[in-house]
Image (cartoon, rainbow, N blue to C red; front, side):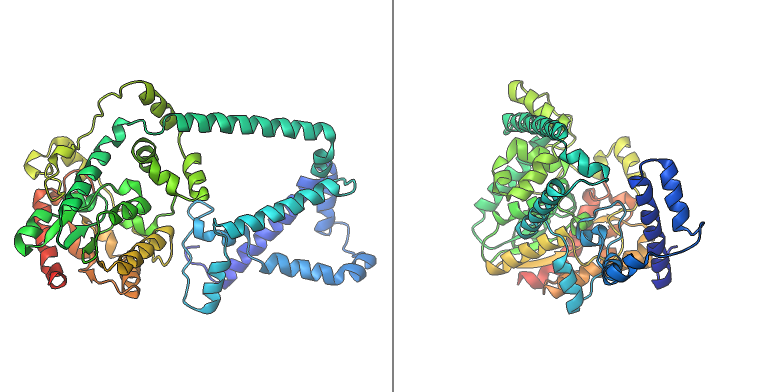
Length: 465
C-alpha cells in the first residue's frame, strides 16, 4: 500500500500481533510435536473452552495486559527519532502539546535514559537469577553455575578484545594520513585568513558546494566587504563544520549558510571522513565530545582505518592520489582549480552519470542536523553575529518538481523562518544545467561559480549595508 490509513494500519498491526503470538509457541515449546498440539488448540481444532479459574482470578490482569500490548508504543516508535530500522519513514510532528510531549518522552542517548535503562536491566537480571525453577529454557540456562562460568569467560574475552582495540586506536592517534592532508591544509589556510581580517566580514560556512560554487574574491571586488570562503568538506558532517566555523567568527560578522541538503537530515553518526580526520589531525575535538559521542565515534572506526593509522605511525605515508590541492586556494579561501577549460573526459563523464540527490526527500521537521544548526544560529545571535541562509548549488533534475520534493524544500524554508533567519532565493534559483558543473553534483566549474556569485551579490547586498 502506498498510503497508510487507519484500517490498513490496524490490519497490519493485528497480523503482526498474531504472528508474534504464534511465533512464541515455536520459541517456547519443547519440540515440534508439542508446538503443533498447542497451535491446534489455539485455532480451535479441538473446540474452544476457557479455564474458569484463570478467567475469574486473572480477568482484570489479562485485560490490562492486552491494553498494554496494544496501546504502549513499540521499540521502533520509541526510538524513531534515531532511525532504528532501515528505510523507516520520517514521522511528521505537529506543534500540539501532545506531539511535543511524545517527542520529549521518546528515547534519546542522554544521561537520563541511560540511568533508567541501567536500572531496568539490573531489575531484569535480578529477577532472572532469583526466580524459582522455571521450565523456560533460558531461565535455567542462566542459573546453572557451569553456564555462569561460561558467560564470565565470554565477558572476559570481550573485555580483552575491547582493550586491544582501544590500544590500537590510541596508538595511532595523531598519525597524519594522506587522505586527511588536503582537508587539514585548507582548514589551516582559512583559519589564517580569518585571523588576518580585522574588520567585520562575510563568512561562507558550508561543505565544498560553497568552496567550489561561491567566489569571495568577486564579492569583495563588487561590494568592498571582507569575505572568507569557509566552504570545506561536507563529508565531515554538520557538527564539525559548524564547530570549526565558530573560531573564524567575531561580533559584527555576517554568516551565509548554503548548507548541503544532507546536513538537514544528518543523523549524527560519525562519517568515515570525520573519523579519519579527527584521528589524524584533530584529536582535541574528539576529547571535547561527551562520553556517549566518544563511544559512538570509537565504535565506528573501521578496522582498515585502524590498520592504516598504525602503518602511518611507524612509516612515512605514501603520497595521496588526490585531484585537489591546497595550493589552488586563493587569499579569500576560494577554490580556483575548477576551470571548465581544464575539465578532462573523466570529469565530463562523472557529471554525465550523476543522479538526483537521495537526501532530497519528504518534509523534515526534526533531525540531529536540524538541532545542530539551531544551536549554531543561537550561538551566533548570542555573540552579535548575523546569520542568513541560502540554497546550495546543485544539478537540476525534473524530479525535484514532484510534491514530496517540494515539501522538503518548503520544510527547510519554514525552518529558517521560525528561527528568524532570512533565506536568499529559492532552491530552483541555484539548480543549474550539468554544463555548469566541474566534477560532482555540488561542484560548479568557474563559469557556474561566476554565475551563482552574481546572483548571490544581488540578493545579499541589502544585508551588507
